[in-house]
Length: 545
Image (cartoon, rainbow, N blue to C red; front, side, top):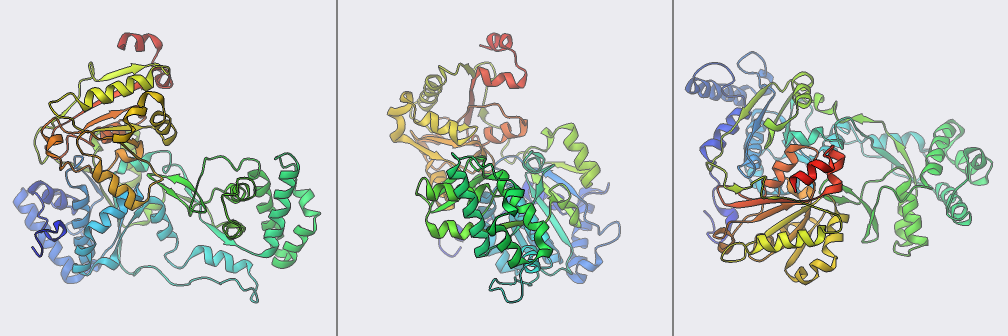
């Protein structure tokens, strides 16, 4: 210990069960031998890797097997991933830890960055979201955006030709470590594509998009332009002259996309902050993403109509966005030599999800770790702790549930309320019924910065505190209860205000309390009409009420 006042200076010693989790990720004990023999064989394998490097990655005993380990919420998934990553990097592998959340990915990497640096494996370990993982894979042999842009630029253009630098050492085999594998199967990733785009800027492009916007505004905010009409304009002819007639087909396709997007630029919803436009991505707002040309015309609108975007910011985004391809999220994991992962909800995956993991990715080996802390102390009774409300009474019923749970012990504890999205959260926070409780309420949404999220998450588990959160913070967010009043009065209470499509998401939200052997409780306040989309009839609702 270097400094007793600094928690980061303390030695972190894994629990016995966490050590077993790490060994299972590394494949120790996959055969039918006794546990002692398995550990000995595993250590022998590790020693071989250290001696000979990944080139000895062959043979029955030495082969790492694709596998998944279930570890309960709050019981050390991040530690297991960090130690396993370190060992595998020392063996000679490139490690990619993929997470659904930018916030959690950054947090976990920062927690163990000193370990990686001390062991000298930092260059071989990358933490990131599924999008960042896709970007790294695509750019292994050079930046694909720069290469596409260079194709269309003439030698005398001022535009940079791009970075030809390669990524990490390609001679090392690669391992994918997935954090919370069930998230990979949601509609945002599985079955969807990652579509990187090259940004091509030139004055002639600005002239053309200005023409489109002026027509849109002059025609009562509705564009009726067609490709044929555009091709007859001087603005179009100037672009063809600049880039060359051989690229006319590409220019035509971009114009088609522009004309389609100018009439629908307000969908999906976007956020304007600090002179930029951003979109929700997981548990954050990203200001680097673009949605076709909708983002471009959203900048035009916010600059010319709402006057909240500067001319410099608008000019920076005026460009042609050339698609560099469509890369299936489902296929990207196959680019790795081995896939491994940890999750808190392995046993709750659906039959199709299990079949996909088994047949498509070879994840046939599953390990289910017992709790480090014994029986879970999270209190939930389906008969008493589910309340079904009407739209008209929802705000009042939810307020009453919050106050009831806040004060149902000798001293006030804390309450976390999870909403399906920010719109519903803000609607409740601004309602008259809840107005008198705003002083003791904090709000955590995707729009907060990393530091703001960290600060609010630390404040949340305080006595007499109410925290309203969007559902993306129901996974992985670690609310560390340091307040003795909260600990001694039943722990934090979690209220969920919507029904999840996946059972795993409900389990994760419920797992924000009753963590690491501590007490906690959970309840639901639901709107009757929202249950109908799950084929729950009004008769069943009335019977439940």
